[in-house]
Image (cartoon, rainbow, N blue to C red):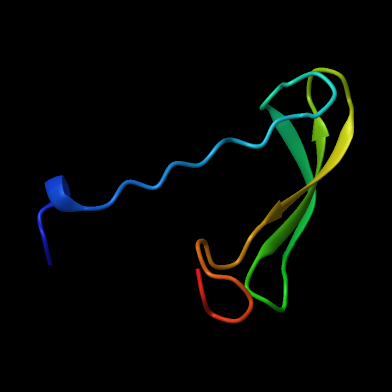
Length: 67
């Protein structure tokens, strides 16, 4: 194993409510998809807006295996 100083950095944005921008939520239901991704239904704690978050299965790789 290498040193943490040489480990690649992966940046991700926190999902937020598309209505008001709040990142605090109540998770209603979540599941793992057949392709390895995840789907979750959420309700915003600020405005009660409902939204779905899709987490993609393999970052940087397209369907045919080429990034």
